[in-house]
Length: 283
Image 1 (cartoon, helix red, strand yellow):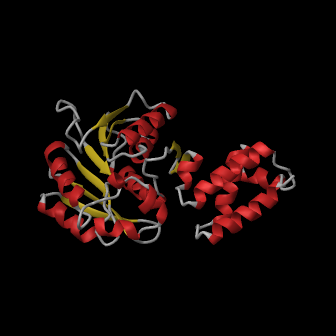
Image 2 (cartoon, one colour):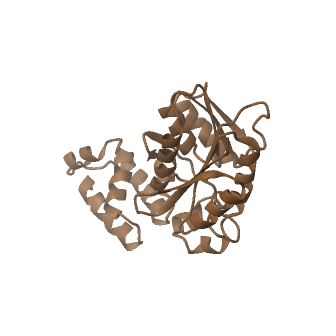
Image 3 (cartoon, one colour):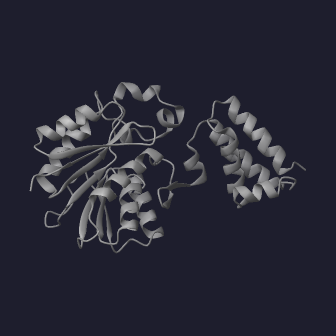
């Protein structure tokens, strides 16, 4: 019988040959998932033989990853900020860079105000809005997306996090379907911002698998920002915080200025890249 350590070593080599980043880590995560143990337990069970069923299951998952399917889709989950999210195939995988958007919102949102109404536009798995609602009990959230797969994924995460009493999940183009009589104080969004011509140049996990709806920002990557900022000016009373792509900060800040928004602020991610733009309405 083949031992756990042998499978780990073979999987690591196979992943490395296919250009996968962190091949050892990803091999460990897949084996830990199959064996329902954590990574520390893997090290304590190196000599453990795998059953035929475990081998078949691990080989199937490894083969999917070898084709560059996103790891989060294979594992069915992704850690994000302070929560764990269910992530289904066909739904945009939340990134660590997007935690910058959550931190910026926590900096600007007040805990004293009861309640605080937030719209998470292009919500995907629900990562941004649900993290905020999880951390701040005063938040009442509208999670908004056009993708049926994303909306179903968000609803599942709402249930897992026990947030159904404070979160409404809506199929909507931007803020169109948020009921007019409902207040919105703040908009947060990680919209599609990749220029159309750049998508095919991205890593295979993104270009070949992730949903185009969550990626394609039009010719210059700014299509959704133009519409979203306009919606915010009409509908939200406080302002907006948005994730942006590399080198997009000047253009997005200019869109905010043209819309008469004020206190325009930029936050950098852990790599020192301007990743979030926030802007407020004049009171």
